[in-house]
Length: 148
Figure 1 (cartoon, rainbow, N blue to C red):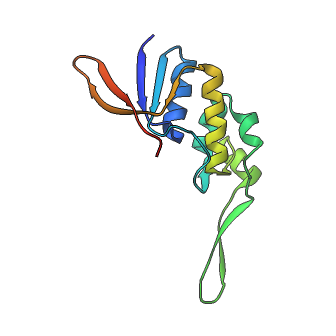
Figure 2: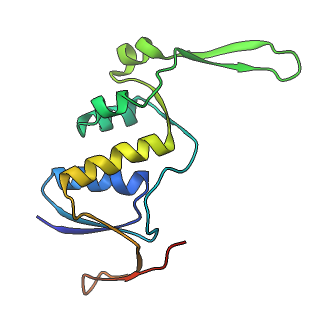
């Protein structure tokens, strides 16, 4: 079991933290913001991404917040002419083995945050910015920051 430091409790940091915690590592996520809250816009998650989230045990939670589009098309701005890009929905599951999801970033972040907190309530250190890391000494320097 290794001690792992992750700088930032965004989508990537939380996903990495959850995967590492599930594999038995002691993880500490240092986030400079004093409060973790919903921010952002839409996120599109292709089959490779949704397959990973499902493997992490998040399928049920994600299905509560995602939209599964049926397809994608492009339109020419001046005429409105349409071209179908590719089918999604059940076609994505059949072809790639996992769904294509669209989700609000804040909802996605909330699912990940909840999962990490359930896996290890002490993993996330909000209000702490990682200001340095010395690989040779395996020492991290983190400091409490003011709310932004």
